Image 1: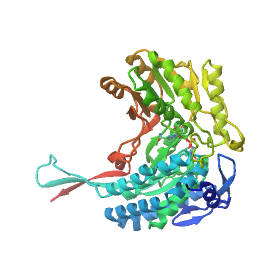
Image 2: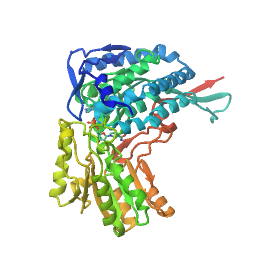
Image 3: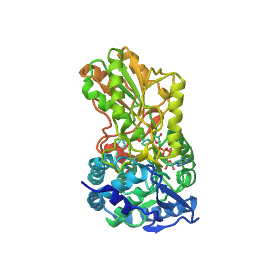
Image 4: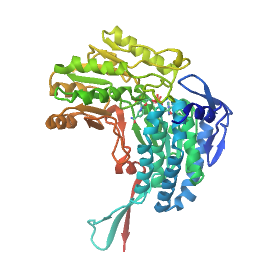
Length: 494
Ligand code: NAD
């Protein structure tokens, strides 16, 4: 078995890691730094530049220069070949990427490793998409020989802003379609998890990505992030993060009316019908929340269970939760890694207090986790609340932690209404062995993705995104390419 601890010691030693602008590795112009600490034990992994508006300005200028210059000469087939080369390099360095992610943001190594199908799939899927970009020849109503057609063109310079909870997949899902379509990118990773994104930039540079096509500016949201969202020479912003930040970004983007797509928060319902296969549904419903310690936008945090089976089902989910191993992400036995930061752990602990105060019953968990192996880290016990009502704070607000609110229901009509009574609309889960019930729920739930008898499935070939305050725009599938392309109509009078 691989010795992850030794590999971890060799990967980060507290030294400075520069950011990436115009093919060069550089400091912030201010010289200021941000510390990158391991959330599992608090050790200093590295420092990164605290980029600000001047660095964003330099990165946008580099991205524009590449867009109108060398990058525009790349044929779709050359962009495809480049993406395939990048995919091969990712595959070769996959373990190092995963280790970096585990150290930087805490996701258990077993889970990061298991994401290879999705991430390598993204790079290869968009490599395929690169050579399928085409317009139409359109019959028009003009008399005489006047021809009309369309061509698809890259939107230009894309500003990408991502959160900390999935840096590899999060950044690749922004960069790969940009390369496929011929756009250039300025990417601002989260200040909580920049290291793996810098590694990704290095891999892409090694694979032959021309200077300026990808620029990574590390920094704070209110500084580098806000400057990118407002920059007048950015044509499009793709953002993943919280709904509040998404709203701020959408407002900032109005200055030059740049296009915006937003993948935001959620409070997703999981509905377990009385005819569900309980044996199969328990672990899936539990991990719908506990995966990545609940720090997943699609976390199925409202668990609606048919009253006939409610008590038994919820008790079994609580037992499953109690059996999960909390620990450092590089321990391969760990199920539940740390929370990203002390601030975030405090925030979750606050929700646990509010839940108990408002009358919910703690069936398991209910507080911070500690112990000799957890020193210096930020850990929260996987928690299941019973006796929850729809009005309680824990049933309404996105907690972004390992917390389930269990709620009984009596009829399909009732549960649809209650499940949809939220500002969010990102995802939903249904457990039923009855085909008609499963279909009815899948169609009536207001969400960007509905999973039946499964959860979490996200694939490069299948569109993903939200409705309502979970955002707009889609990642994945052929629709994703549309987000990075403009359509130009061409008229020719012969
Ligand atoms: P966040 O909104 O605080 O930060 C996300 C990114 O935005 C970070 O890079 C941050 O630096 C930047 N940012 C912050 N303020 C900014 C501003 N004013 N202007 C520009 N950029 C700014 O989110 P987070 O705490 O990092 O992540 C958790 C949230 O992300 C949760 O709400 C979660 O549901 C959501 N999320 C959604 C998806 C999805 O696909 N829908 C995926 C992952 C996470």
